[in-house]
Length: 139
Image 1 (spheres, one colour):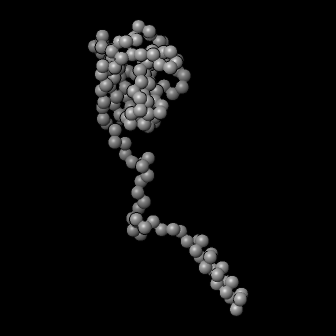
Image 2 (cartoon, helix red, strand yellow):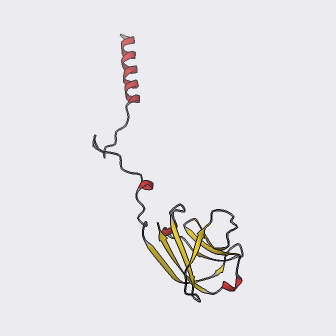
């Protein structure tokens, strides 16, 4: 009798530990919803223009500009195209994405901590205080 009780208790424990908890919000034939990271990018195809921006000096001592803490730049892997126009110019120039050190010459950008950084290589101190505009297109 005692061994039957032990076997019964053991069987109950094993059956409970092998069962998977159900998701009460899903019906048996319903698929799991996409995680947030797999949802389509709502910025794709959109274009944003920022004007009356002013060149300054960043923490590294180079002439630069930052757009800080923006949801637009919360995903550093989001595909985008950036062009820049100085107020004294009438044409747009490409801004190239750089991850790490680069020997590229021209306008460069990087994204970190929800912040867009734009700078020029080689550095040009004559830009400090000058106005410019950028156009960001999400691909």
